[in-house]
Image (cartoon, rainbow over all chains, first blue to last red; front, side, top):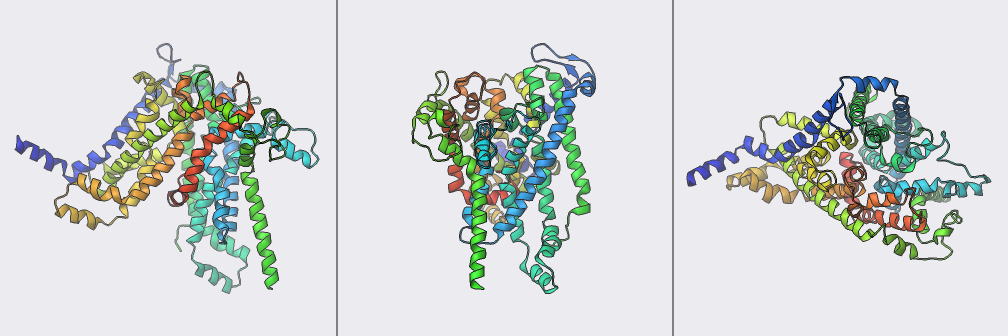
Length: 301
Length: 281
């Protein structure tokens, strides 16, 4: 008896066994909460299914139906517009502010905190309902604009042209975490490079474009990939602030998917939508990686 | 010359300060509005300082909806966030140790799988997981909001800890091994205490993300007595509600308080977490 428990122990302490034991939580989690659900939804995406009655296999019908679904194309368009406008704007803002805050003064810590605070709480429901009230017809934005002589209130959330911009502004407002990433990589650029550039007579603008920007491209690339994915999958803001209104002009893909699955009970169609989204996100990521060698500098300092 | 530099300095600070104020103006407006009388909030939206400084909104909002007060919503949120965070931190540390210190069959494949989970956001899995949890009979309970986090499903945290453990010299392990330590006691007695900073960083982010989580609460919690704060706040926006905006702003202010407190006390960890691994705040 004693011997077998000893054997058991030495076996458990083998490197190859210990490795599996330690990573077991991840292995199980990956199987149970990723692979299995994805397998099930792949099957349902080929079925007519509405949660209440058992699924009926219909082949590719859910996927071919998308081609006749105007709202589907609308949602894709809105989501692309949102991600392609808000992410670059946010990165440009983050970089600009990081450059400004690079100059260390006694108040730097305070400024950094003020710019970063919105990112910390930006994803919360509290900020979303705040945003909704700010852009309401009697909200603070119109009140502040009336100071500049714009007396009649603009219905920001009721107009198909402006509603999406309230969501874009909310996204750009949260540039803080990208700013911190830029700040830390800006600080790693050795001062000797700038000195050499100055000796060669480069102006500060040339220095920025010839020294700073190329060395930052790996950071920009990383940020771009992660935020494009996140931008494409935004949900809470849209769900609470606009619900896709007016006239689906702010209907995000994720919200459309939610509506199809849980409000119209077209769960099979919703599962198919999820797979199409995964494919789109994957393609965007691949595309970004394919462009990498044209603009990302990886030579080191 | 000296004078010019001073002028430049003042311009710099005025601009940076001014822009900073624009940045946090919405938040200040929210906090100030929560102290205004409800019927004056939008009439006086342009001015920040309340004409009459009142606390009534907090009392009104705290009453909550139906028979459920915000005390219950906060308790629910705290429970979910804390338990899920404990699970995340422990399971991520275990998996990270396995990846960093042990060589075993399939390690490369698993590592790649983990990187994929980092790129795969929750929204993509929203419907697949819902269908699966429904089969398991988990819909309507807290299980989907808590149990998965005990299985290291957030690659970011595993990755963060792997980086940290890789930075700890292997000689420590070797010495412990010679003294008769098994892999398990090396983890428990040497590595786990040494990666405290990484544990704190992961814990902070995990807590804030769980606290803010709206989507999974929306999907899985049906009983309003079990609502977390994020979902309860949404009730203020529902068409049927009385639209007591003062109470809404008061409760919104309280709901961001934990994040702001963490921000004030753990700023260093947050900044490091973002700067080193690009975690989103």
